[in-house]
Image (cartoon, rainbow, N blue to C red):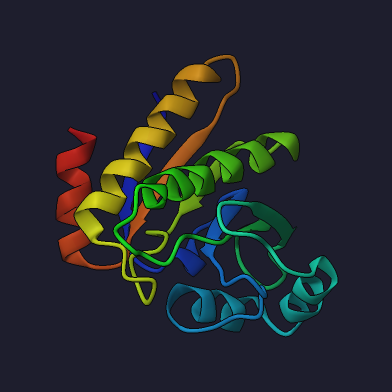
Length: 166
């Protein structure tokens, strides 16, 4: 299984696509979303405007513009509420992002920790959903070469990812 972890700034990775934890309007905001928009340049705002909005759990793709990554896959994670739908919507983010990557012939994808910032999803719970869904997708698509990198911005997230990676 081609699942890796990496600590650092997702905007510096040279991969086919990075996955942005976007808002529904795809307008750029705080956290990783804002960092990706700043690093990609103003063309990203125009491309996102052309896409319209994105529903929670769905994924859309734009060029990477000034990023080392060729593309950005934008997915909207759930705002954490503690309901039974939270993990289902979060899993859909990972599944749909990987589907979009495959549909576009991409073979390396880096994920930020979706919904764990301002959307308030507890890191431990979100990480278990993320690793579980990525592993499931990789098992179900053994015939497709895909390298998945789970990006930890800080040491706490990286330590948790190390534990989950095994």
